[in-house]
Length: 112
Length: 113
Image (cartoon, rainbow over all chains, first blue to last red; front, top):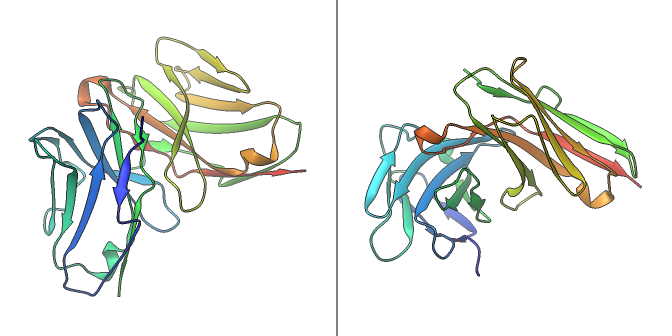
């Protein structure tokens, strides 16, 4: 049973470009969460999705950030017009209807 | 507003001894608590959890204690092994709020051989 898969592992974008981060949850998991870890900080919740629905996006910045979890395919976290402050590690986690969530390896975004 | 705090940024312990990691929280609505371990450049790995209706949960070398009145939990690792060297995160959730995790800032543990 494959774990949570994230790609790419590393992503470099110039300021103003778009970043797309992908997450395939564990087989059978219908709950997907995105978290962000800024340098030297803990993980911060961004958004919680179920298939085709955003359940809680209270941690998402109001502009430039969006997320989806379509009926088919991976969950996508999209950052438009990236800025240097978006440089961070972005982690996806999936779970069944339980609190224990299992994390992917993360995508390290560097904005240059 | 940091609802989950790990006040010790680092901890050094001798191999074979006990590691004790502490975590405090402020939100009394939290009803589930988890510990994750993280190596550099990897995602967090789930270690152990505890529901707010319990005060202790044990899994092998790992034991988590919960003191609801003090809003405090701790993770005991005994005996500590060099492979335990990592950053440990405490997290809390509210089941009715979709189980999103609120993390502490982490404690870096170094186990010396």
